[in-house]
Image (tube, protein in one colour):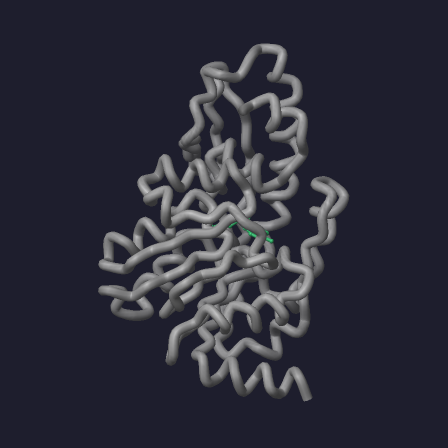
Length: 257
Ligand SMILES: C[S@@+](CC[C@H](N)C(=O)[O-])C[C@H]1O[C@@H](n2cnc3c(N)ncnc32)[C@H](O)[C@@H]1O
């Protein structure tokens, strides 16, 4: 499993294995806002780009029926290890949605839409999986803030700060979070993440014992790359927006006109 990871530079796989599968601008504070935004009992929720399933795990504890979809097999594995039932997880690209037989009351995208080339198209497709009066909740980079195309150079894909998103937004929270990041590998092959002046030991779900010593230089290189990307990412503005089905239909209509 690790040789695949060591030899490929995929930002999301790296996040997952380094124990950063729960990671988005605004951090836990933003996720708590989502969790506190409504009553989740019996709500059927799909988390697109669910990472290691941290948000859906919290929502499940609040009574929701939770499903997660992510493109990274390492993220999906992390979500399984985090206790999300395997049958509720989909390893798939959000732009090629599986055929869901049921509709979801809420679809969440945290720290995902910025990576999608055609976010409006994705949201339109997602409305097809939304129940009547359903909601899509997006928490992400503030699209006006800056472009974060440096990701492109480092991990070989584009991150889009799509201004069309701003037209869709009806609830904005724009607080830059100036957190300094330091991330390093210690002798026990654990990862230490330093945010500001407090040190947090990052818990990786993966058993790093499987990593061989000759993998270490590649891991250090990955960590260096990750460090600069994290720095960039955390300093970006973030926002949450909630779109009801009616609003979405109206805005999609505007978009089509
Ligand atoms: C920044 S992480 C956020 C993870 C989690 N939502 C969170 O908030 O902590 C972005 C996640 O989106 C997933 N992702 C990115 N593009 C995707 C796509 N096209 N389809 C499915 N998942 C995608 C990545 O694999 C990664 O897990």
